[in-house]
Image 1: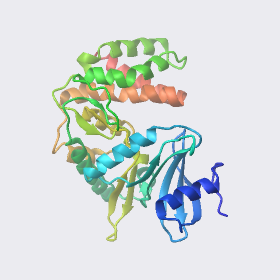
Image 2: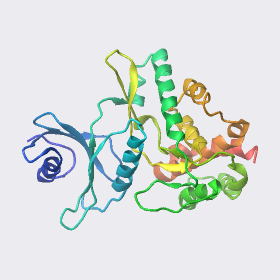
Image 3: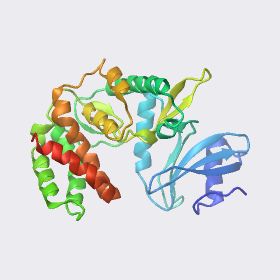
Image 4: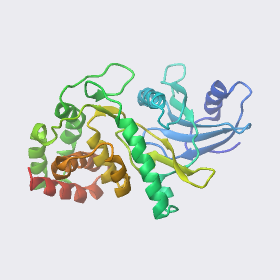
Length: 311
C-alpha cells in the first residue's frame, strides 16, 4: 500500500475518492503537497490515472474550505484560471474530517519556475499575469467586504474595512517583545491616521488578497511558451486593488514588466508611490511578524521608517 505523510487513514481517503470518481475507483498513490499549517494537502491518484488535490483537516470543523470553494467557483465563473472544485465537506459527527477536493492542475509555482525562466520568458509571463490581474480587478461592487458563502459585514469606507481586517492582527502584534518601542509607537500613529493615509477615489474591486509566488502555478504549453496555469488559495475580498499590487511587489511576485502592462489599463498615481504602497506593505509585514517572528522585524522597521518621514 503506498504511503503518505501524516496519519490519515487509507479508508478515509478511499471513501473520498470513491465518492468523487465512482465506487470502482481505487487509490494507487498518495503524495504530500505544500499545504497550510492547519491542514494536510495531498495529491490523490487512482488506478485509472485520475488525479485530484485534497486539503483535509482531521477531526476539525474547518469552514475555511467552504469559503475557498465559494471563492474558487466565483473566480471560475469569471473565467479566471483556478482549479475546479469536486467536493467540499465540513466535519460532522458521522464524518469528522473537513476537506476540500479539487482538480489537479499540473505545473510548478513561480518561485520554482524562476530557476528555469530566461529574462524574455519571465517578462512574457509577467505580462500575462498583469492581464489576469486586470481581469480580476475589473469586477467591482458597491461596498467593501469579504467574499463568503454567507452574508458578511459590508463597508462604504475603505479605511474602516481595512481596520476591520487588520485591527485584530495589530492588537496581537503590538504586544510582541520583538518590536522596538519606537517602532511600536510609530505604527500606532500610522494606525490612527488610516482615514487620511489610504483614502482614494476608486471603487471596491475583487482581489485575490494572498497572491505571491507559491500561489501562482505556471507551466510550458505545447509550443514551449510559459503560461499561467492556475491561481491558487484565494482569500478574496472587494477591496482597494492597489493593496493587492503592493502585496505582490512586497514579496517580489511581480516585476517592472508586470507594472508596465498593468498600468496600461489602471495607473497608480503619485499617492500610491509616496504613501499608500508603504501602508499596504506595512500591514502584511505586521502579520508576518505575528506569525513567523524575528526575520520580518527588519523589513517592517524599514517600511515604518519610510512612512514616518511622510506621515
